[in-house]
Image 1 (cartoon, rainbow, N blue to C red):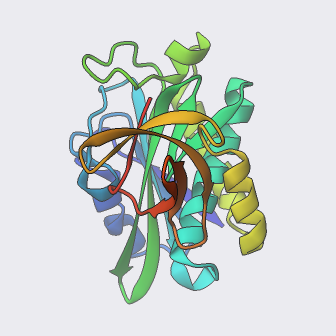
Image 2: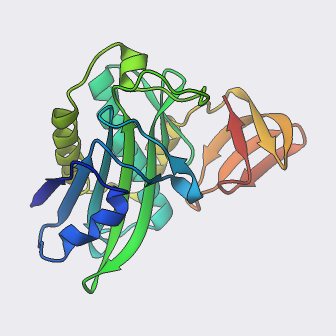
Length: 237
């Protein structure tokens, strides 16, 4: 059973969802808004949406129902969101390690997964920010939206509902770790392509070869293979 709640405005759906978990017994509880004022991104980044143009959506899932590691769960969440948007946009969508979603070279989704204990239960709090109708991104040159990348105006409410139903269904039966890892690498942005990276404030050419089960990214540089955790390397695109 799943439930989806709506707030006209909130600071962060990841923070506000705790209020909806106190008296609900559903396995999947979602919260969405089209006006999030203080969204957070992965590892302390700030996600700044435009009111009425984009979707901030959070899904709470009890950790006891998730048997894979945190890294693999992070990958699987990115895969589900990628698959959902690929069907919606009818275009090849990629995952920029560790969990940004890229459509035609532009980031349209950011995902933030947190663990919280609420009312004696432990949850994965999956926060997803999707740029849907926004057309201008000021100085953020690598950001885009479903509108800018497809030319199609999607209905915000319908998209929120179908996303919630899709994620809840896909999280009921999680594939094996190996299958998740293979799917993640199959859809990895700029895999096996020469790219530019920023490493310790210096730019280097390299080739992404794979993401592994420990959450590390393997990049082939001029002096050989290197593995990185998030924030140790920045892909410039």
